[in-house]
Image 1 (cartoon, each protein chain N blue to C red):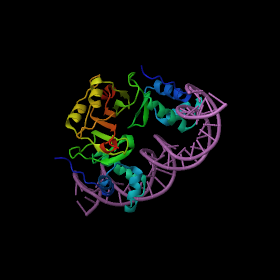
Image 2 (cartoon, each protein chain N blue to C red; image 1 turned 45 degrees about the vertical axis):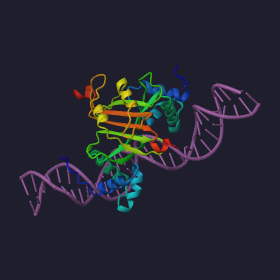
Image 3 (cartoon, protein in one colour; image 1 turned 90 degrees about the vertical axis):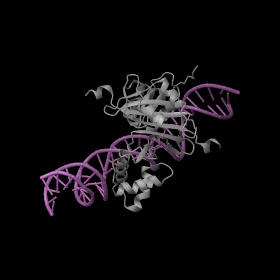
Image 4 (cartoon, rainbow over the protein chains, first blue to last red; image 1 turned 180 degrees about the horizontal axis):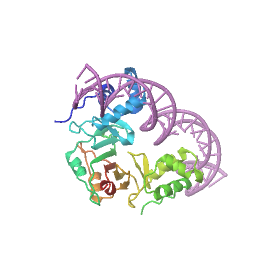
Length: 132
Length: 132
DNA sequence: CTTGTAAATGTTATATTATTACATAGTGTT
DNA sequence: AACACTATGTAATAATATAACATTTACAAG
């Protein structure tokens, strides 16, 4: 059984916003959107984001400085993430591919070193953009 | 034969600095270091960095907003990159592993979509930090 | 129930990272 | 020489993120 994380008020407001969004959201766009709910300062947003990332409810798309809800119910901790990013329309999808994640989790480098965490971002054109 | 890129003055100054550095450098630390050489403004640094990334002489470590010289002589274009990052001392190494790069370059997702570009960052503890 | 502790909140200010806009200069063709 | 392209210089500003400090809430242990 996975640990239940009871989100606090701000965390819930911000998670709900990200979860409903079809695209990754940036911190200041989140801030703008939640100001009517009483969240006034960047730090309030960043604190909630940090926590949500920590418990795996959202992931940060590093190359875009944006945040997306976890699409993968089994991924409760953000330690092994893979995304596909369309370089034209900026659509981002989380990749859940058991073979890929096994391959990467078991990867050992030249020195035999293994890693407990990774983040992979693939770039290309999504179907729609490719057919344009 | 690979295309030869003749670096301009600013590009060369900034590449040399990054290439000599044992660790990834951040843009404003680069700026600070090259001010004695007549580069005064952030934009001058960012323009050179953009170009150097484009031609594959350096890579950006996205999770750290820092830049590292390409360690891999065959990687003239930054389109397939993998790094190992120590979460304790922040040491970063580029991974050149043919199997890994083949695996990722050939990876096709659920929809059969393939990608022309990827960036992978592994996190863990380096040998030194692990033995502490 | 009250006390201790960790987590979360609120607020202001500031640090860090990156780009826009505009003017000028160099480089290499044809 | 004319052209196109790349690079440079400078000032201002936008976008992203954190530091410092005061207060409040949640909740388990005594």
